[in-house]
Image (cartoon, rainbow, N blue to C red; front, side):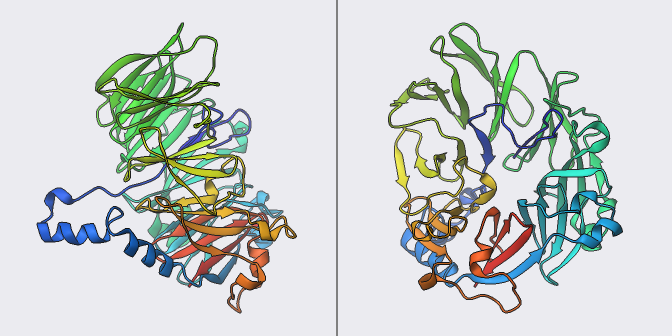
Amino acid sequence: MDYRSGPGQGRIGQSSQPAIKRVHAGGRPSQEGRASSLRKLARREVSARGNWAFKRASSEEKFRNFSLQGEYDTFDAKAVHLERLAFLKRRSRIVEIVAAKDLLFTLAHSGACAAICLESRRRLCYMNVGSEEVIRSLFFNKNNDSLITVSVYAHDNFSSLKCRSTPLEYIRRGQPSEGFALFESESLRWPGFVEFDDVNGKVLTYSAENGMYKVFDLRNYTLLYSVPDKNIQEIKISPGIMLLIYNRADGHVPLKILSIEDGAVLASFVQLLQRGKKVDFIEQFNEKLLVKQENENLHILDVRTRVEAQVSRTEFMTPSAFIFLYENQLFLTFRNRAVAVWNFRGEMVTAFEDHVLWYPDCNTNNIYITSDQDLIISYCKQEELSHAPHVGTINISNILTGKLLAKISSVPELAQAKSKSVLSTVREALEDVTALFYDEDRNEIYTGNRNGFVHVWTN
């Protein structure tokens, strides 16, 4: 996840490539090497690469009869006076939802972050520890069971990012102020940024003030190494490596690949470019380098063998976002509300039968990829709801087949029952959804809307 500060506004999540929003989907490391033959067979039958018929049937059963079972109102007018949070004076849309064990965190566009206990179904506290703190994004650090908040403050015109780690045990006690600051030595003013990488267990920061990139250990936040900003335009992270993209030269761009663990240089080379045409994106996925220029073919280069494949510009048009699927050696593309799955030979392997995204610019806070990387859950549009233009559906699809496994809808013949304790109707809960999260352990989907309500969907 990539958090970047913006001039004056403290904007978070904007990539330096305007057409690309970088999102990392997590994966689980394979244990095949240490397994017995019997365990290998058992794992093959239940793995994402094993018995797909069984996998699909179990997925369909998991999401069967999902209905509206819970509702939280993150807005609290009393908190304006009790906690002196001025930005709670009016309702604000939910922009991010994160579940961490028995806790649920909901972040509003206003910058207020509510912590909710899923067992007692009540709000424990707000994560804002001061009246000037505006939280911009959240990251659950599984390595030490803590929530990292990335914030900006009014006293410096919201121009500098500040990070804080708060153990879940303190949040359960309603003591968010017991957390501690991170990366205090770093000046994260625009265009500085902080990026949390749960795939490699690393944190990347960039301080424009001293022109230095730094890599920290996500487990204990110790500094591992630094990379001087000498003509570096961008850094991309993938499993095990970092790609350094340098300022474009005449007809080419210099590139360097570093080990993510110690910063050692693994490869250094140049990528030829068409003169006079802007670069749409340069992305790195393991040994594969993806390069696309305006109105040109997609180039997929193996940096080890130097073998290159091309995909016609008419077949592969520049997407608004990527999600790399590390488990399956594939990648998702998002363009004009459509989702597609590609392999690294440049072949589209999946087109979805019913998965038209609600937001045309790929708002990734409305998309969830499961840890096995076999399912995608999204807030989608639906043709039969043309009479209700603000109401969407929650669609669950198989990534490798494109098949729709389940759909939560308010269409009368498909309408779901709801808990009597929920005040909103199903249609109201599916109207203007602005954030979505799936808790795989609890088998619950959480959605937030423009009025600051969070709804719980489960069976």
